[in-house]
Image (cartoon, rainbow, N blue to C red):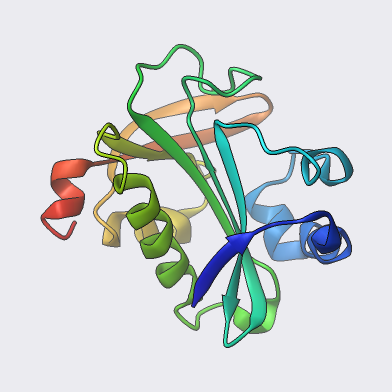
Length: 165
């Protein structure tokens, strides 16, 4: 598997994935504004397409929440990253792609020695996502409302990552 930069040519793919029931269930209230955002490359964000055997299977976004423009995470200290991932097609769920995507994303985040931890924010009722992140070594921090969504915030410290979770 590899992660490559998402590009304007991925617009139709991302629009299609964004309407899938399993993607909507995990992220029901976000407007990713693909038409605009795929043409931008701010220094605080990476938008990536995960490919398995050359075939797109998912999406990864890595942000620096201290620099991100919308202040989604509020006031946070420097040295953090936040990750969003999802699998595009239902047929690709449960095949290990999400785990591999997250491992690649974490390696990318922690490659920067200034990064002390990675945050994720699955919906509070998404028990499968909670277990997924916990298996990867993330620890529950708090229940928090982001816009219309009630979420759990999880954190993976560099020390936990280096210890293998």
